[in-house]
Amino acid sequence: VVRVWDLNQGRAMLELEEHEKRVWSVDWKPDHRNVLISGSDDGKVKVWDTNAQHSVMNLDIKAIVCSVKYNPFTPHHIAVGSADHHVRSYDLRQLAHPLSIFHGHAKA
Image (cartoon, rainbow, N blue to C red; front, side, top):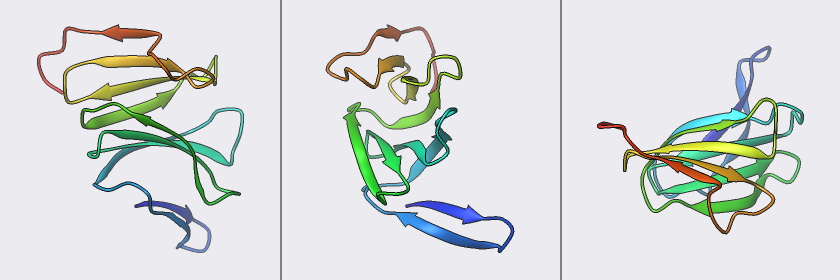
């Protein structure tokens, strides 16, 4: 579950419940305050629009997703770190294949 909190009121405003396992990482889109990404043990990356209250894009990494991050300079690019010791770069406008895959980490 991804929970969006109102820190002023100290309560969850929204729960996004599409991941099948534990969520490890979330990141807000730098140029759009209602859009975020999440990565989970289920091997999925989801792009959420809090106005729609459901995922608007899904990516199956087929490995536990440990971290997700928007590129602050090119907000349609994301990086995904996974337990298979790879970091993948994607363009959200074209998800069929990663832009690049970085190898070399010995641990997740």
